[in-house]
Amino acid sequence: MRTSFRSTAALKLRDRDAIITSMGIIFRVYGYLHPPEGYVCDVEYAPSNIFQSAIPKAFRRGVSDKTYYKFFEDEGLRFIRQKYPQYQVFHEPLQKKIVGVKKNQIKETRKPERKLQKLVKQTPADELHEALLDVLKLVTSATGLKTENFGVFGSLLHGFYHPRFSDLDFVVYGKPQLKKLREYLSEAYESANSPLKNEFEKPNVLEGKKWRFHNYSPQEFLWHQRRKLIYGVYHDAKSGRVIKVEFEPVKEWNEIRDEYSTLRKITRLGWAKALVRVTDDAEAAFMPAIYTVETLKLSTSNSARVKNVQRIVSYVEEFRLQAFQDETVYVEGNLEKVETDNDVFHQITLTRCPNYYEQTMKLARL
Image: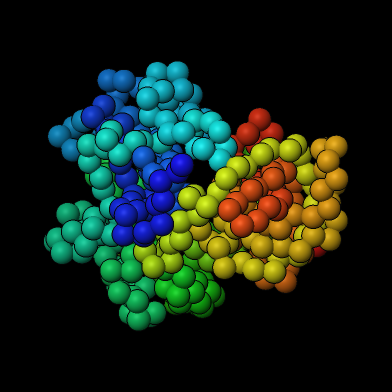
């Protein structure tokens, strides 16, 4: 019998909180669906004495000159499975182990909101720190939001950042807060006087980058990214830099609902292509992004006669905030049967898999 894990108070960590193990490996808590004994995670960094990457941009220098490397693409997954398989948790509905950290393996945690409050109270140590405070002041003054509604992740959370080269990676907590932020950024991006601009307003943002998606063109990507209104650049007059700014949506504690304890089984059925209409986009901004849909057309590789899918679930960051209510989208991904305590339904899931770059979700007509 599975232990109930319904209390949000018991869920002490949430999406984008950080876990550090005794080996010094840094994990990021991934979403909100976790087994009782631990947390599903994405492995982000490892000390240089146990992992080194050939990717130049992976290098990080931390506190006291301790060095780390960031994982890119499937490097982290291979690292854990081949060298540190103990950092996996058993996902009962999927009936398999996935990257994660058990509660008794946690040495330290770092929370984005706490780190930001420390940075707010400190005298700026460098130009990036000063730019962070300037952006935060600009956003909070315009929206009425508080600094407590935000956090920082990535290099800022861990003290890896470079004052001249690092980005500003914010977390914004809560659905109402995200709505206010996106409304403000929509106006700011169109204002000639605003130092904040849309990161994807110019097509050359993808120059020099290899495009791998098969069913999703660079032009379609730019169009979708542009309207998400969480990605920007800040023209910092003090340093002369144009700094990338990102606002990652994370749920407030009172918005988190445990679904793990009600899940019984998730069965992969094959590949699906579908044309669907979004009927509910309330969870589209979070990890995973969930879209409740009405099926218009469905083609599957499975012999079972599945007539419709109830939702699209995306663990692929490119497909968060990808569509909004009443929009019609084309989707390709993994067809799954979901069995819960009270229901049985089908969904299309976009996630790390052998056909990763064949997956897509995009407006049917652009």
